[in-house]
Length: 219
Image 1 (cartoon, rainbow, N blue to C red):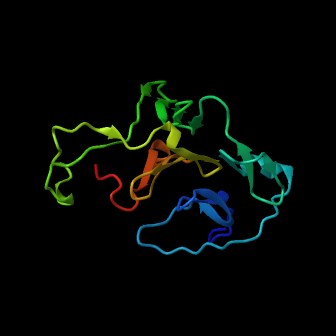
Image 2 (image 1 turned 45 degrees about the vertical axis):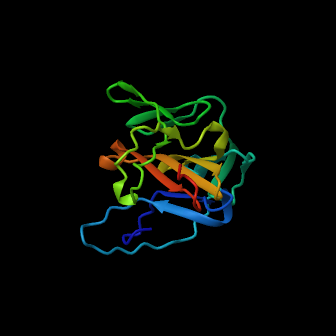
Image 3 (image 1 turned 120 degrees about the horizontal axis):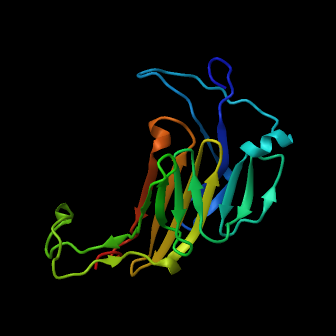
């Protein structure tokens, strides 16, 4: 509840631990809620117990899909677990419809639902070597004789976690690549907010890359 006692839209899901062997951690939970704060202000929010066992709460429960999730629904938890949907995945809010590739699971197109215009996309994550005898300060001094190469492939996809609730919907893709020095990991997240205003009109993309110990990704 906020300072005036109003109930806020809340989304709860098991924490996706991307360190080491990526997995959903059912001992740690992420809680999201949306609130409006005035500039340079402080606000107090109170966490209260809510009995959400009634059928009227099922529509607002968070749905979690993953590669190894069983189909499991319990009135005692504010979320349910599901197997990954078959075929191409679609993520939506009031503004956008996002279509994902059925095998790579990367974003394939964005449709503005208000105008009907669609933009086809082809995402690819590649690496390039910098010029010889240059330090990390010369990231854009590229070795012109070398070719770029993808840093991972579809076979490196280790887990897929989809979270859908009243606050936002997101797709989390996690790749593991075994290199000469150890394991490199790549977490790619795309999310849509279920709200009006600038936040609801944006497609949020986050990348968390860990190249692992050297000499990984040095070629």
